Image (cartoon, rainbow, N blue to C red; front, side, top):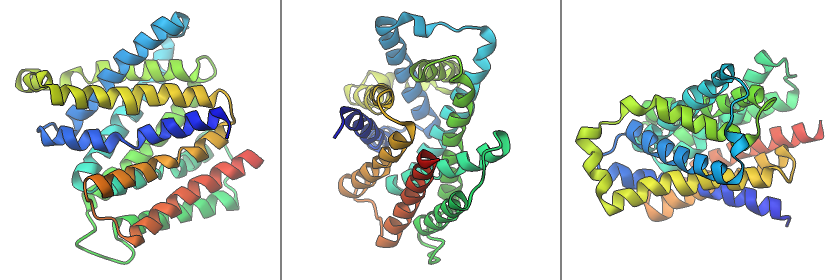
Length: 292
């Protein structure tokens, strides 16, 4: 296996561990928005420090007008999708929340059709329906199980997928002038600044002084965020983007294993089939894009 594939798989696997940190931070009384703030601020500091050491030129904006791209990736994507995903984890389970997050490529396909006039082929339409069918299985719409279905988790889960998709849309504009790693760093810096008013410093700052909380808070921004993005970008530079996108489907698998094995969260065979449908749709879209 190529080294690039190993880096991409490792980065995606680290993304899959997000729920482990989030669940532990919830146990200390942090809300979804507060956890988003902790993740974003830690990641922003690490990414800026990394680029400052590695390549300081990548921390320069070509024009202040370009900040609009990072408002899109940082606020409308990173903050929004993280809040939705963490809320979905709080209301349902890690496997369900992560499976719904992977409806993102379906939203990218739809948005690209309207924004970039990309062709909506039969393969893409089939992948969209496969995603919808998989989502229905994951959240309990098929077969209908009132005890499993939670409208809030469904809305937040799909919202996370939509926010996840927006990162690709806004990044497409920014990539004409900036590298992937620069975009990621600027994204988290803008998101960190925007989140300053949303953390109750007087009420919960003392919690951050606890070793366990510091471990989970720093770990969330370090391993499954900053390091994962750095490793993934390193691998992405050495292979095709479509291949990399397919390899990232290891993320929901790792998340499901953590949720089921560590937190003993329920995840039926029907839900597993739904998750496989969503992952299959992602692979189908990316494989077709690569052939084109």
